[in-house]
Image (tube, rainbow, N blue to C red; front, side, top):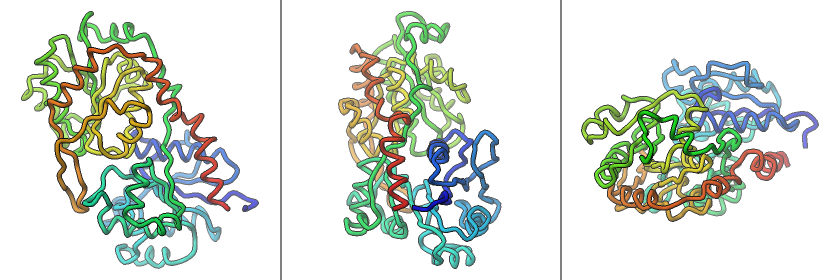
Length: 401
């Protein structure tokens, strides 16, 4: 083992932002930077830098054509950060974003292609997978990207299986493939008295009414159309149910106002964005149920934050989010797809759901009594306080052997 810290450069979304990849990048960097084993820096999209983060932060120069994921920046960033020291570059990205790092012929920047053929660092990947392709494998190009890594880590057991099927056991074992879930800060998602939380929703929510929440970003993979269809069916069958939708943008891939209007949900739905953490937390506590209509999640933060706040969570039975929810003991809240379709440049399989299945399951869950303490306890193993010292730190230590 080296006597001085090994340079570790993490490439992902900006750690000071609030998106899923940003949160993973921040949590991993914050935890490993406390270890004497590594000296940490990040190279990220949208990075503005923050003095609250105790490591060197570099910004991807997105104004350079073709440099969306930092390929043009890697040579000079590594020289500035590590100099002649050998170290580790770790990507926290979908493999389709990493072509230029592992397949030099696909890189638009000759200097980077030449640099990547050198022996400056080991390349590790925390592989973001939210779908597979035909045959339950990755399509050929992302599979070939993964062959360029020295070490691979999946979010979930499902993700590890998808990678093994795609590159083969021999190649997977050579890259020491395994899986580790990323964590949540359980203390930041405390249980509070549900009645108190619901009282804070007054005058929108009245005594005797129930609340169903949907927390998701406005992107194609988050099926807000499915959510709207399911909410309408729930509303038609139970007039005591109201809805809370939390979304980053009301106009992007989906028009949230149009969905509310066209499905007749406007008078029974409260929409929020840019809530403080405390506001988001008590609203999750106020929910009697949350719906998570993603068409494939690598992990799915809102699912497990909902459970931490004592609210049941429904999710589709597909990809990594379903895998983790099943491990938490809530397989009964997974909804089977009616069919599958193929989309995109890399032939990603996406599930197709019947909104009535979601509505029927939601109404069944709403009719039941739930032990909120048990819901919270089911995600205790995902707390960083447990997960980091028992799983993640040994993984980083193993990487230096």
